[in-house]
Amino acid sequence: MSALRRTGFAAVLGAALVAVPGGACAQQKFPTKPIRIVVGVTPGGTADIIARLIGVKITDNWGQAVVIENRLPVVIANTIVAKATPDGYTLLLASPAIAIRAAMFTNLPYDTLKDFAGVTEIGYSNTVVVVAPELGVKSVKELVAYTQARPGKVFFATPAVGGADYMNVARFRLAAGIRAQHVAFKGPAESLIEVAAGRAHFTATGLTAALPFIKDGKLVALVQRVPGLQGVPLAAEVVPEWTRIGAQALLAPAGTPLAIRRQIGREFARALNLPDIRERLDAASFHVATTTPEEHERRLREDIAAFAKAAKEIGLKPN
Image (cartoon, rainbow, N blue to C red; front, side, top):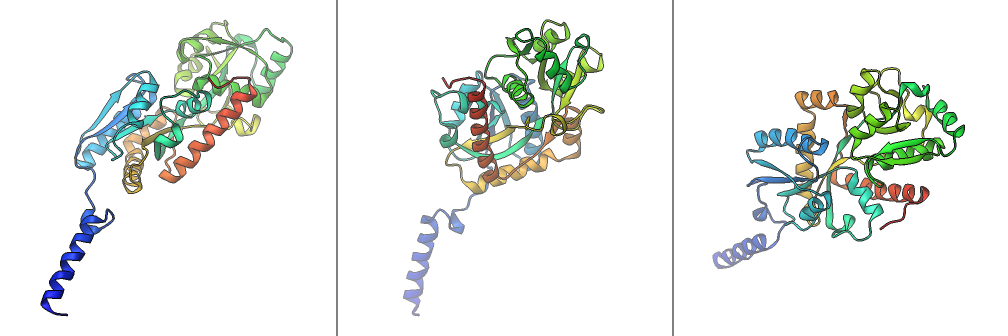
């Protein structure tokens, strides 16, 4: 090959590498600027706490600031990320509510499956069903018998219809064969207070919120999803159809490159498994369960289908 032809070949090859996104010369380091994580809860909520704990570790490791942005209501937070530039620098830390909303609402300003790309599931909180001691009920079987003996006179407490706690209790009732009336309260704490006071008969919520009441003897735990309370049976043993659906998870705008999403997911998994982080999350009864982006997207589709099925079974129609 002549010197002239070699020069021309090198020029063409160099131009091709610049033009092709997958070329070696086109590869860019990530991240090169601050990362924004949007959460649709107030400071102090589970998603917010996780984002802030992990954000510090990612900043230390990557040398780029991780900025946590609380935006309410949750639909606003989701919409911000759905419409963001798909470059990995804007992420959503979502609760199971994102799958519930996709199953329950037809007029959202985004399409959950089309406008988001999975990064990783993060994990989930232990969930318990609790009653007041004065009820005299000490097992799921006894709660079933109690409700059957009092048709139309048993009430369960949760926040608003269609929320995560509401769907949790609804699915528990379906799995256990319990008929009861719903009473709505502002949040999980208020629901626990009403059950402890005897103004409602039972509820299901995260163990972290219920634990102080259980330790003080104001509530009795009948069943739990995963090990967390000694002597309390697991759902798999007494009401196996009450399976877990949904998780705290990290999503990116659709179109975010898979390589970047995998990199972010691996970094989250690394940070979540640091000893000090695991200790804090274990103390809060939060179970880490990370996934690949592909696994996350598959599970999100399954969660939406499962919530839609549950909604139909309890008579809720999508809005």
